[in-house]
Length: 311
Image (tube, rainbow, N blue to C red; front, side, top):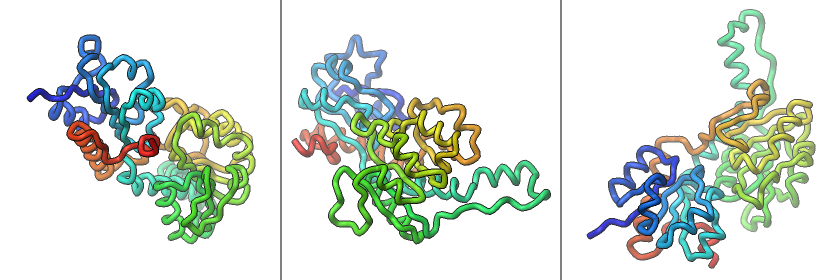
């Protein structure tokens, strides 16, 4: 029995790349000129672009399985217009991403990175490190109270924080205070955590008005997508002292990071590693492969994207 032909869109982890090759007739972009008519499925990560041109060039394409909860790398309207199924990997990464958000918030507020450098540079004998702010009992706003947002919120509650949130729609089954807009939420909190999906609908959602509402004592944490924050405005707000600090895992043009951010002691920078644990990535890989196998077996998906479920 012939094996299904699956296109691997880079970058993929070595484990996922090899697993697709072991289980299927795997092709890579360099092979496409001779194999376009064979491809029935795509495996990608949320940093591997699957645009309308690629989708249109594959006449037998029936499924796109995405290794990641975000899928703004995929031209969803183009795929759905063709009846192509799309899956992502929700739930399995919630804990890892949530604890990264907490780690960034603590690192910025308690100045963990700067204090580490203080010790390494041999400055401690000259006097104690200055006092810092703290996260416990602070007011924290969450932009996007989905699965990951709720996981962040429960961890903040354990720290005694007062949690509030903004969503496109108010969530009916939570006790957290709802704010009608991102700017209204930012004005009411000490710290703001961004957890919304990327894409055109959230591009530059965190703009100057939100940053100014958060203010010179406020801290922004972004574990969503770099596109969600107006990056030039963020840099300017930090430089001019209109924002107190930032903890960032994502950027507008990864892996390029604005050089000015790398010189600021009130900013903690991570290289897009929020879900980067052995346990989480193994679970994401397994779910990606399960989605592909299920679709090939009977046309179903374990975790279809919401747009597909709503059809």
